[in-house]
Amino acid sequence: MTEEWRGVPSTGGTYEASSLGRVRSVDRIVLRSDGVYRTFSGTVLSPSVQKNGYHKIVLHLGGKRSSKWVHRVVAEAFFEATGHVDHIDFDRSNNAPRNLRIVTVAENTAHTIANLRHAYGERNGRAKLTEDIVREMRTAFASGAKVRVLAKKYGVDRMTAKNAIERKTWKRVY
Image 1: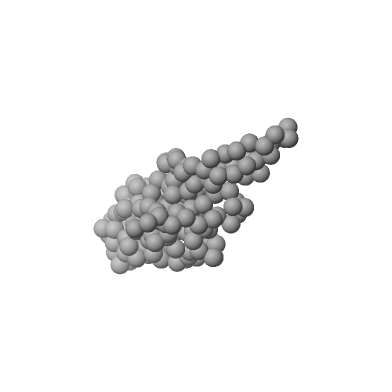
Image 2 (image 1 turned 60 degrees about the vertical axis):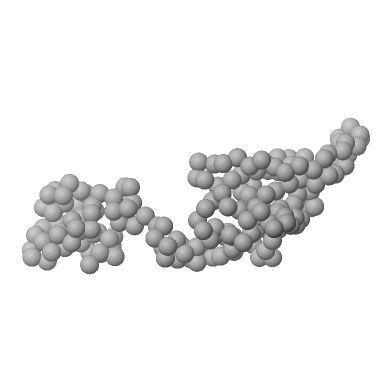
């Protein structure tokens, strides 16, 4: 597969994105503030990997540095629409256009949930309860137990217990 390069519209032709998810600057001549012209050779940019796994690059636009997410730059070059960019395979380092799509926030969330990537319930690292405990609490409450007593028994705040019992949280547990 040959690498296809397309201009990134917001950069005024200074940068291009590729079909492999890379970004490069193009050869250009720049007029410096002292009136001297300087020639720059185009080069493929090296992204930095952020803590969240996304790749970031620094673009020089109009004499100022601007940090951009690689997937957003590639999406801008290859798709006409702009908006929320989704990594189809969930690999944040795979910025190839075939792995990206423009979606709404709701579509992105639905995709995450459908593929069991969202940390609901016990999979959430901050969960104080388990599905079994929530079921026990609901059964005990239906049998007349007080929320305050259940909260103390399971070591959670009264509102945490109340919200779980009333299905304000843990809605997927039956």
